[in-house]
Length: 296
Image (spheres, rainbow, N blue to C red):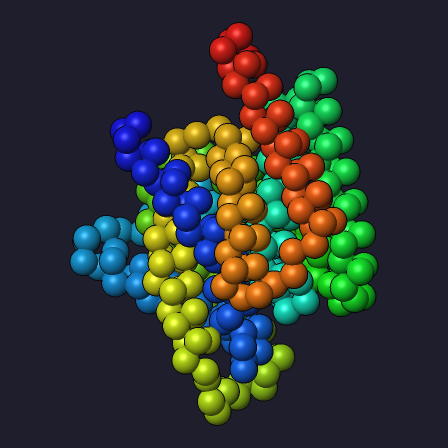
């Protein structure tokens, strides 16, 4: 079990590292709503096929249905806002701001899950993280006003992502990851279609660039089908705050990927803000492990 959990954990890190850039590329030549809808629809089709091949049922009891709703809030609310924001900010920034999710998760987990996730050491880490966020906002102002709006959008998406994770843990329906994501997508995908019809008039793009198609396929088949399944498998078997610590590695990797592959700006302020957030996460993790060793 530990080996499977470790492989799933690092699999999520790899997927999350590449996802922000793929999100940005998946909206080239098409609307961000179409890019998100196409990704989630592809992911749902893959998951339903997988359930059919494995002969797995989708539980429909009350805890399961509520859990699907909690997952759908992440898959629709958080992801749609992220897609919108990706139009205005470098892809690496998305991962950096999502790195703040452990702090948001910790406060909510302390309130609703009775997890021991607060203390002076962690409060110091939160302060460093907030300092890094302020630097990132300053960096966004140097680009343009839209970049600042995009950064705020990613921050809102991060909060929704953290709230969804805590709600899933609070319900504790103990559903397999495959059914968990499929149930969430069954709720989210119709919402995406409705949003697409409302925003784009139900019109399909005339020409979709190859880069966009490949990105949508990667996001639908790998990031959604495999990535979310691995994420919820890890979430079901770890503390919510520990799951959020996956963001310790992905921001720096995503920044480097965006800079090297997509020629995205990498300024001193961006690196400073990222460094502050990463230091905050590192201190947070050290304090968290010390609490666990002491029986907390």
